[in-house]
Image (cartoon, rainbow, N blue to C red; front, side, top):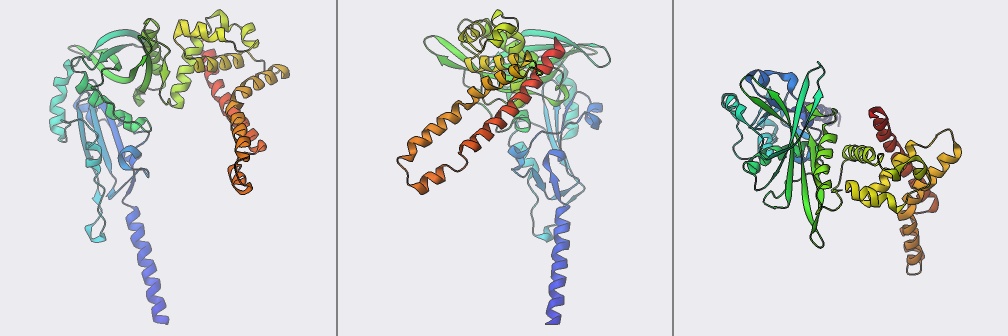
Length: 418
């Protein structure tokens, strides 16, 4: 018996040691992936230019873990303009076959999402960089603007519009759409052959030694849904600004540029957005608020009087803003002119917003009352879990609190700019 106990202890120690060894081969797939925009061999070797994905579960699974390598680096390089792509990886050690465990097929998982023709030989990639300098964006330039860099230089940016019939668009879209899997949750590749898709691409424009250089900044896709009788409803599907260019106002500039295109189009109905991210919502709210502030229907007195249909009619006619979004804008602008030291103003505002937020909760309560007559006491009790008046009030309060915090972030940006 004593001998058997010792053997069990040895086995436990051995298992612990094995698990410890295996853990050394686990990598966070976000931290292990290095993306880089490059133009020269010096850029390729410059590690400070690299940035990481915001997510990688769409490539490596929900755990966002790569197993089988020590000190893994997945290197995904793009020419900054043409997006010519290089993919490979380095590591210091691979898990031993003696452990009976197979390392993850890293390159296969990434390559499946890349366009055909991407490179895996670094020397070949570097040798092709020079010939990429002649790249010019596909499509028609529809807008340009300038910003000031940290060192005081003025930097130019241009927005290009393209459709599937635009020369070189399909090939270029295959390259730029690969970014969405790293930065947009639940993203999927679109059917680029559908003629209702429109593409808006943003580029940084710099003067090189021999010619103008275009650096890819980000892009937006817009789908034209049919609207009776002979109009269409533009719906923004995907928008992405790459990490090196984020937090500089480029997302707002792109949204404003695209929105302006449809404001001037009599056949376009209101502009909608498909499953927007929190960042996109804040950016769009800021732009729509900035526009609506200029309208007489959004003066302080009219905001304090409450929401009315004229607000939607004017904002829709002038800026193609949907009814739900106009209500959103109204609430932000009314909060902006609400004096927090005035209890009555604060109470009135809260009630106004909560009455809107309560609509689905009230409907839910009515539906449950109707169900009561058709359910047994046990079934009704099960349906009521999480649906009591107190629980609904708590949910409503939490919903309002989160919304107010988001509104204040938009207001802060409005006040900073103005």
